[in-house]
Image 1: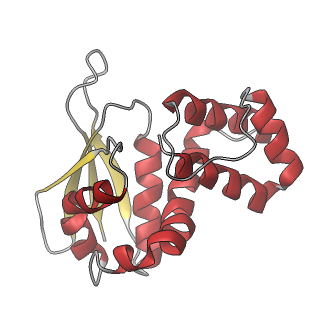
Image 2: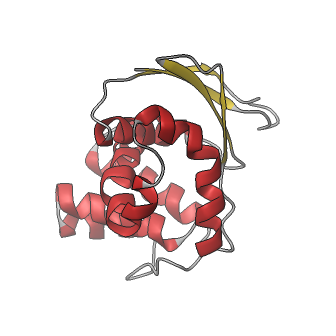
Length: 182
C-alpha cells in the first residue's frame, strides 16, 4: 500500500491517543520507518501489522479500528489531500457511490503503482443500492464500512450498511457485497 495509508493511520492514532501511543504501536508492529512517504509503495504487511498492533495496544477490536480508519480516511485524509476530487464525485451519497467505479481510475493516474480495489454498483433503487467490493487484499470489509460511514457523514445522510455476501473464503475470489440503504 502507498505510504499515505500508513501515514493516515499514524495521524488517526496520534490525534485520538497521542504520540506515545503511536510510538508504542509502531514498535509493537516492528515498523522501522520514522515517517512514511505518501507517494512511496510499502508492503501491505506493514499496514496489517499496524492495525493489529493498534488493536492490541488500544484494546479495541481490529474490526472497529478499520471502521474508524475508513471514516477518518474519507473525512480527514481524502478531504484534506484530495478535496476537489472528492467533491467532484457527486452532489449526494447516491451520485458518489454511482461514480465510485471511476474514482480509482482517476486516482491511479496520480499513483501509477496503485493496485486499487474495484467497486461495482448493482440493484440501484431510489434509496438503496448494492456495492460490490473486489480486491486482492483480505480482511478489509470493515474498512469499506467505515468509508461508507464517512461518506454518509460527508453527505449528511443516515445509512444502514449490511454485508450481504462475502467473497469466497477459500479462493479469495468474487466480491464482498454491501447493501446500502439511506
